[in-house]
Amino acid sequence: MPKQLSELAVKSLDDDKAEDIVVIDLAGKTSIADYMVVASGRSSRQVGAMAEHLREKLKVAGAPAVEVEGMAQADWVLIDAGDVIIHLFRPEVRTFYNLEKMWGVEPPAASQQAALYA
Image (cartoon, rainbow, N blue to C red; front, side, top):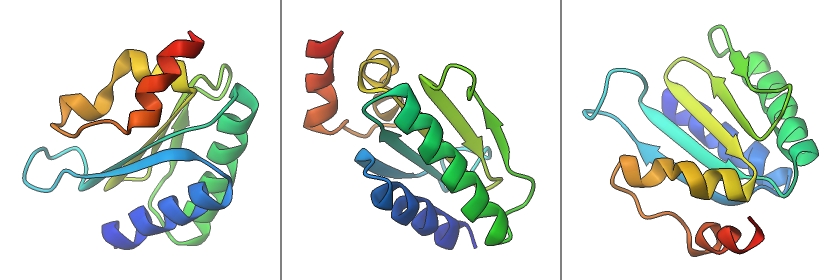
């Protein structure tokens, strides 16, 4: 089910015009989750809308208790769906935290360009 939830997350984010979607396979690297999905939205409003849509779709798909953090500011929203963790960022916040590098994955080139907006 974790793979299906990560695929659902990617489809939902793509439908909502998320940018630079990256899926990181965490199996065997950590016990916190099997997959991490990282994506960017162009504004806090888009990040918040993507998070809300995804939360609803994950619940409908039968994900265990879906927890959401960061909706008040929507600069960085964390969605914990058990075996799948989703991070949604505004581009400059994503560039600052650079989560992909922590897991040994190169961030998309477009994300690096977001530093120009900061």
